[in-house]
Length: 412
Image 1 (tube, rainbow, N blue to C red):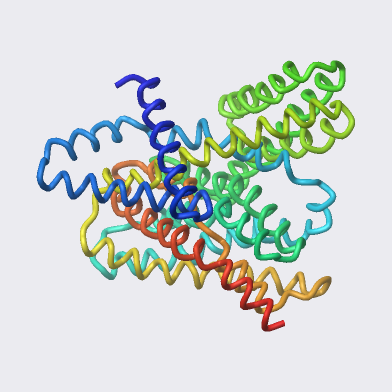
Image 2 (cartoon, rainbow, N blue to C red):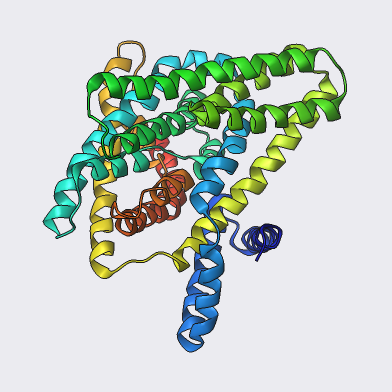
């Protein structure tokens, strides 16, 4: 099956599942799409028990889709840019300390704590896992992806400052987590020495290089956009920023996700405010909002369908359930420690910490990173664990975060 037919099938499934959710389930889009696609996968598995060739054929087609490459090398750049373009820099500046701490210190703490605990837990249950691979798992499961929860938080009337914290953290910690993951992955290669200077150089090249590239392409885009007044061309320029910028980041070995966040912030603030007419700004907003919705729909449908190709057993599922608890406890610790610094400037209540913990959903980027682990590094084990954690995160945490927000408001 060629690429066009695969994309066509994904679009048809996404549209059909979105209709079912909107018409009958009425759940938040991301949660509803994943739930419907999971149910669809379960039906295929049941049918496969009766007609094995059918299930094998479907799984075979899905295995042709490189989920990791599709998300990390394609969809992620558009989604991060689309998310950043709608965020006001002044809101980020007002919450800059919390966003910086939560997207860096929290991710590092989470990576280390989950890395250590999963190393001992998995080896205790008989899985032969080395420490660096456990750290890889810690890095890939640490970034939060609150796409599914932001709409719920808004409808629940969560304070603007908390909404900004969660949105800003999610934008930057995706990029930071990818940088940490890539750095650890480089260190697992044969012949690479584990030295602090080498780790710092790898991390600095990816992170600082990505931020600088984002500033450069964002500024170039701003100068081009401000020199004309033609909304079709200006929308095309924003597309060029994403696709050209991400491709350039890949070839010069800097962080594409961080570059897209910075370029998106510049485009959404500087370019829209000073370089675009009102009609152009409206078209740019609507174009990226629609593209973001379509890509998110495809992403969550793909995540649900991944159930058909995951190789697992009962022991893997048991360990995954234990790690759900560990991930949640680690999330609380990783936001609580930075909050001790924040309390010097603002009051961080226990209810805020609980919302940050329960609202820190894991998403597609975690699955994509797990799928990019080399086959000789316990890939099936970590993919299964990641999938179970992500499903729990989106379906259970995502569907109950609104109730937690409302309950916390009543206690105040």
